[in-house]
Image 1 (tube, rainbow, N blue to C red):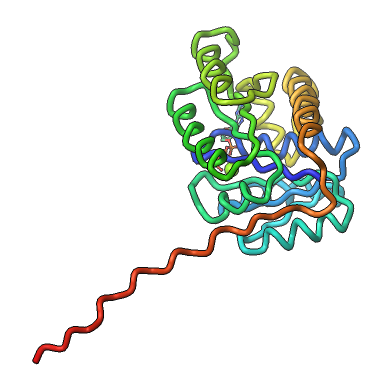
Image 2 (image 1 turned 120 degrees about the vertical axis):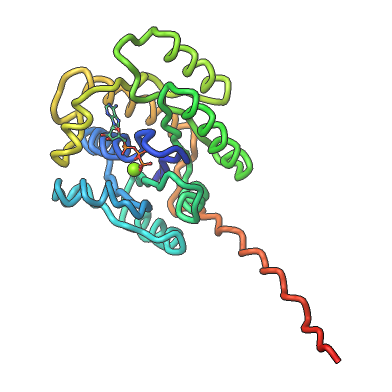
Length: 233
Ligand SMILES: Nc1ncnc2c1ncn2[C@@H]1O[C@H](COP(=O)(O)OP(=O)(O)OP(=O)(O)O)[C@@H](O)[C@H]1O
Ligand SMILES: [Mg+2]
């Protein structure tokens, strides 16, 4: 079983959309996929309700329960777990990063996304976790400087999975209908099949495991003790 978390502190970078579309593409390729939604916004859970597909279950899991949830999924012979996370630096995203074999950092080709991705990457490096970037919501003019500069910046920070994902209304239409873009065809479907193939190759470099090696979060720092009461005499 492989566990992949989609993480980026930046809101709207495309985590939930990519999670849903990659899940469908992986399922079509024969993976036994399970989706975990750790975002209190519950975008992925709502997408799953709309889809109502027993072959692509979505469950909301709290940070403290992630380790046991992953162990149970490994026992159920799930082959791929995709975890969607909130935009914030939170116990949920922290737990997802620790529980994953590989983290995907989706980023739009904007400087704010690149800066935010750098922060997320820093966190992953501290945790000694493997990661790869995906450049998403790219404007139609693929070779525009903004896209190539963004790609170069992400490439310099670590692996960048290909292809770049375009800004296409098909992503919005597919997710609105509880579907993945591979189910509606066209260019978005092509690029999502290719992205899944790239992710699969990248995952082949991470050793699969029977049971997830969940690193429990650091115990919370002991709160500073209040000063001992000084009794005025
Ligand atoms: N490739 C794409 N083309 C066009 N629109 C997209 C694409 N990817 C995502 N979107 C749209 O961008 C918005 C943000 O996407 P999404 O919700 O997936 O991001 P997110 O990182 O999960 O956001 P949040 O941090 O709030 O959870 C959504 O309205 C979504 O439909
Ligand atoms: Mg989201």
